[in-house]
Image (cartoon, rainbow, N blue to C red; front, side):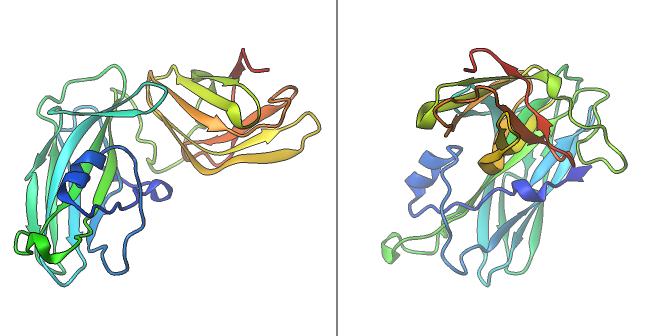
Length: 267
């Protein structure tokens, strides 16, 4: 079953040179596209493979008036607190890995899991979908603005329910998160450790002081903390940091935000 999370859509990226495209792949460097250049479209924008599921569908569409070529690569996704890490992986295989799409058409790429054994904890990947340079365009013809999408893919442990499964769903268990906030002012930073077996997506981070006054810290998406991993983000806090205050955040697609469990050395 394929699932989408519209609020976490991967932003298109632009790449003026072929070497720059591969140098920036996976680094999260986003840029605006020139008008009319976004002919490559990708759906869905997030994929989950349930335990035992061997393949999922990725659709690439060409909304332009010229043929395009695209390549799909699979990267294992991990975190080391300071940054996301992407490494080439063959745990998932795109089939076919390179496609040519006529104007107004779309192409199915199957994301295959050759070894569909059970995993004790959720496995995370990124699909890097690159628009390839037009081989018919001379290198001297100027800049070519090419798209890259980064699509999150998760292999679920046995018994896990997809995060967007229909019907009622219990709120995300915040007790699996351990949060440490260090520093004050512009030097503050927040480290979140995920002790659970599923990823957690954080958004809409707010500081609430002892009197109940709310100060937004990060609007919209904060980021992911993968299962068993840790991630860190910079914050801008007042001079007294979090003394007497708390942090509220929305976890995954929960309707209601929750208070983050805080650990020392939060001042």
